[in-house]
Image (cartoon, rainbow, N blue to C red):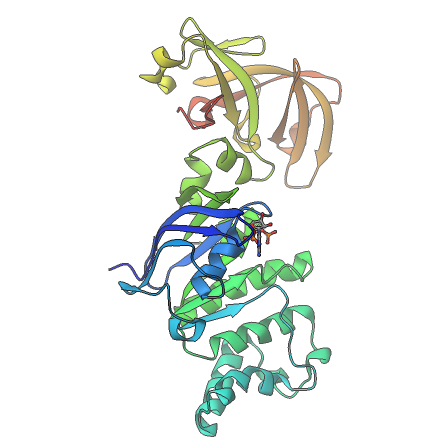
Length: 359
Ligand code: ATP
C-alpha cells in the first residue's frame, strides 16, 4: 500500500489566492521525492500542508491509508528542516541535537545513545562539545538535520535546506543528505528550485509550475521523456534549445532546413500538417558536421565559452539562437559558419500552442 497519498489537494489562501491546484501524488515508504520548480510555484505550500503547518483547502491527505487532514504536525510523525536552521547559539551541538527528545521527556540514557548515533551518521562526533558559532555553515546545517532526524519519524520534510550554503558546500551536503537518507530510510520530501539538486538526489521528481504539477517521474524520465516544453526547459543545464518550426508537406521546416521526421512524428504527422511546432534538442546531444540518421542544421557562431570539459558554443540560425556543447578541441571560431547534427532519437517536437510533447 502507498505510504503517503495526496488526492486532489488544493490550497486557497484566505486572500483568495489559489496556490496549489489538484495535486495528486502517492509515495512509497522510504522514497526520496523532490518538489522542484521556480519561485512561487507552490512547492513550500504543498510541503507545509503535508507537515500540518497549513490547512488543506480541499482534497485528502492520507498516511498509511488513514485520513490525516485534521492531524496536527506531531501526530503526523513528521520532522522538518527549514531554509533558516536557527540553532540555539548558547547550547552545544550535543544539546541542540538532544533538545527535541528532552522536550519529550525521554530518559537520559536513551537520549545519549540517540545523540551519539545521530552524530555518527552526520559526521559530527568530534564537534558535540562545540557551540554553533564555532562551526562552518555546512556543519551547522548538519546539526539542524540532526535535530530533525533524532526523533524517529516516518516522514522527513526539507525546505531548501542548502540555500544558505556556498556552492561547494551544497555539492558536499547533497551527497551527505542522500547518504543520511540511505541510513535512516525515512520517507523524504525535499523542496528546491535547483534542478541539479533534484536530479542528483531524487528517486522521483515532481516538477511544478504556477500551482500545477507538470510531471512526476524519475530523473531519467524527466530528462529523456519530458511531458512538455516547461519540463524540457527546466531539467538540464544548459537548457534544451527550442526552435520554431513548421510542418509542411509532411516535412519539418526549421530555419532554412527541411527535415524528414516522418518516423518520429508517426500518426501525429497528419494532425500537425500546416501547423507551427517547436523543435527541441539538448546542447549535449549534437555532433559537429553532418551525420547519418540525424537532422543537419547550419548556424553562425556568435560566442564560445571554454569550460574545460566542454565548450559552450552560442549559435544563431536565422533569427533563432541555440547553445551547443562541443569537445573543447573542436571549438569552432567565432563568426564562422558551421553545420551540426541532432540524432533523430534526440529530437523533441512540441505542440506550439499547448506546449505538450508530440514526439
Ligand atoms: P519559493 O521557492 O519562492 O519559496 P514556492 O514554490 O515554495 O516558492 P510558495 O511559497 O508555496 O512557493 O507560494 C506559492 C504562491 O502562494 C506564491 O505566489 C505566494 O506568493 C503565495 N502565498 C504564499 N503564502 C501565502 C499566504 N499566506 N497568503 C497568500 N498567498 C500566499
